[in-house]
Length: 301
Ligand SMILES: [Zn+2]
Image (cartoon, rainbow, N blue to C red; front, side):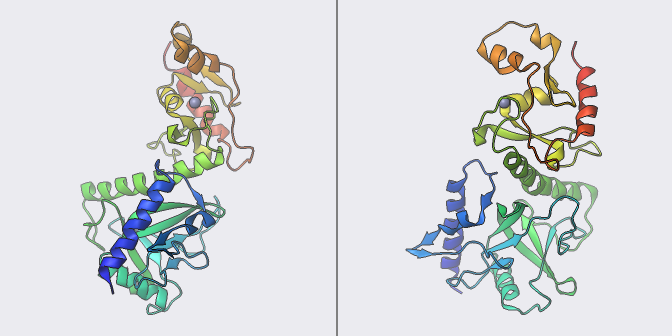
């Protein structure tokens, strides 16, 4: 294996992805991943048929892929968590020595970075990188993955409360929140649901019910695509959303007189309709909105 070349291709691939999406959070159609060339040679980043990609120029796997599972459907295979909280990735087939599995093993042995393409909607992928393969469970036919910040986690061990919390926090930020943002922004066509601002780098996925709430899951029906200002205002209950999708500005905020940001950016929103995805499965969940609305009414004056 030409280790220097393996590393160089990975560094160039990740630079290339950085340039495609400086804000790190957009999902891509498969064909958008086809433009990388190294020394004039096109390098295939994603395996569009199988899950594991080993470009012909390399000896080790460069990427893995997980297909999208619609809400309520069971994934075709179970990529569960291990006792230490790290993600698992199933072998290709059941033969540990099948060429794709060997290519992943070579990436593990050489400590090479990989890219994980995560399906966030039909034919739409969020690249998560770098990731590493840090272990293998042949009996369960799967590899162990580490996200950035999880490289030193001891594989296969039950961790103490603090350590386990740390592993979960990293997974939440790098995987679950990243997927949530990509799914919500895509569902809302990269616009703020309140003001229609269409600058992706200024957009967030806001939770209707917060992370700590039992129903505060990072799923699209618990999300709203909001610009930074409206996200902060919503989080602090300066603006609220009625369950019938109408925006309300808290009376004490509406009573202030100030410059254009307050007048147009906030106060003018009062009574305006929220723009949400027409698909029922993607629209904000009415029950969650109602619960959050009750909280909004109880804050401020
Ligand atoms: Zn906005």
